[in-house]
Amino acid sequence: MNSPRRPVVIGIADKQPTALRFALREALRSDVEMLVVHAAGVPLQGVNAYLSPADLDALHAAGQKVLDDARELLDQEVAVPSIAYELSTSTVVEALEAATVDAHLLVIGADDIPWYDRMLGGGVARHMARHAPCPVVVVPEIAYPAPPRGGVVVTLDGDTSATGPLTYAFEQALVRGHELHVLHATPPATLAADAEAIRANIAEVLAGWGEMYPDVRVIRAFIVDGAEQAIVAASAHAELVVVGRPHSRTLSFALTRPLAMQVLRRAGCPVAIVPSDYRGA
Image (cartoon, rainbow, N blue to C red; front, top):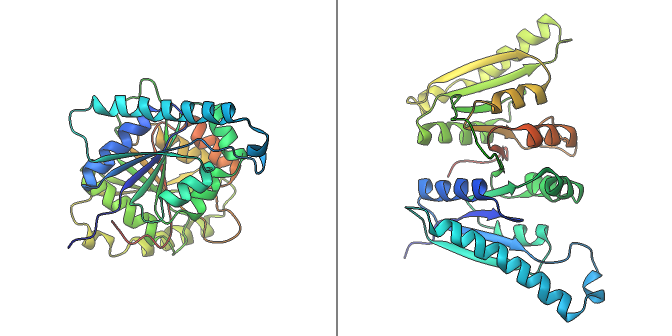
């Protein structure tokens, strides 16, 4: 008997049609189930003791309304995968940790900046991006998105532990039928010799990937700019931007709070955060 394939999980806070449709497309593309999760739990420990039964019922009803709205939206799509809906009474972190134990992908939607500010402030996005056992995609809600023209973009910092992000980026470029842009941003103050060494390092990292993915056209781009500015600029035209997860206690450029806020406030496309040990779907 075949074991069930890992689902695409989406955590929603409110009405987030762009994120829901992104998760739906990913589930269809990967031929897996979709799990829609909303957490109606109180984020502060001990607060439940001060809430009346009526307060808790109101929280539950509001959470169920979020899921009902999501179901109504997805039911209008022409093609849908098998979809399950989960209303959790846990905190957001606890609910997403439980849902992603064996997930194919975690999608997080952001319907407005204040909500995501609160999410970052509470450590939810940073925690899931650093600890989820699968890639995490943050999908901005854009009312009238421009048609993507820049394919898939993966950002590299010259670190040789780029296998996970590159695997995910090549997979996504292949299934989408797009070219893959490999982007490295060099700070303006970088010495010429150092910049050349970084380019050589990235060329070494990329060696052999063309043989594994011969149908993916690779375009390398070296930009003299700050990392966050380069990623935001790339996201204005890309279908997907892929960045690596930090691999130490010190957050890499891809997940520091300033960059996260810059990218997620201004990103023109979904941003995927991929663990270094990702080995493919």
